[in-house]
Image 1 (cartoon, each protein chain N blue to C red):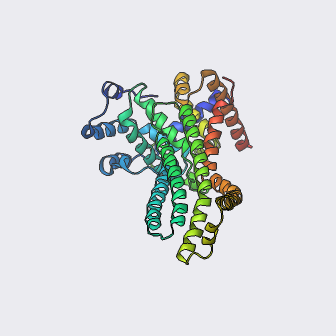
Image 2 (cartoon, each protein chain N blue to C red):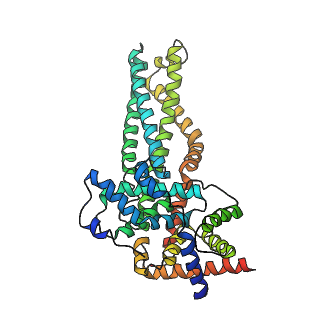
Length: 215
Length: 182
């Protein structure tokens, strides 16, 4: 491309970019304080959605604890308290990851490359945790749903299992867990990719553009 | 390219006083409004998208303003925040017919005193639209005559890497323009 053509482009750019809609920005800054509005950036929306998910999850746990305390059967109560503890531990770990996500800032005095690298690392960690959390919670949730519905229907379906030895109970739970984990592995992988994969790929593409020349 | 009028104001003092912060921020933004406008223009083609990105950049700048330590020029920081925001935000752009989008821009330009040939304008926008996010950032600095050292620092690559990138972008531009002329 000749220098003349490039200079023409520069001149065109100068003329056209001078007239980008900025007329109202001055008023907006003064009167509407637009800079104080809520961010609509994809990463910010992601963080907000996660906080909502965690809040709903925590509320659900508290509600279930109240329900469990009202249950008559001691064995059933123990059965439900244990997953609750697992659930609580997973959620608190997930919460810590969300706090880490908050450290992704677009406004640091870092270069574009550094910001991209940092964002990709955090997002990858987060996606992994998000997948694991949802995957591991599924058997607990499904198990809960079955046991609770049985409890409220008189306990005829699952209660007889308590008559067997702990080995049998353990084997049933293990088989059930493996079955659920296997069934939901690929659908959940697909869902996680559908939720975050596109965004991550675009960030990685942008970063790889900065790597493609030997430095 | 880079205005440093507010640099001393910002670099000499950390901005912590909330009451004054807003006014200082508004002053800084007004002074550097052109940077935000140019980044928005480079990354989006229709008014709604430009407005959305413009607002998002302002939100990010406001959030980062108290932490700005003055390690770089204020305009460099604004470029960084604006480009980081534009590159990493992948909301679905509103699709508008190409001819229509040119028409909108033309209308806007018609209000200005400077006249631009419609065909030239079409080439310019066609060129921009075909660049990737990173290429757009480099192209923006190139069109603004930013020194190479500064571009390399903002993007975070070496000068050599930048030279190669610029060469490739020029090649790409040449092909797009040739294609258009055919």
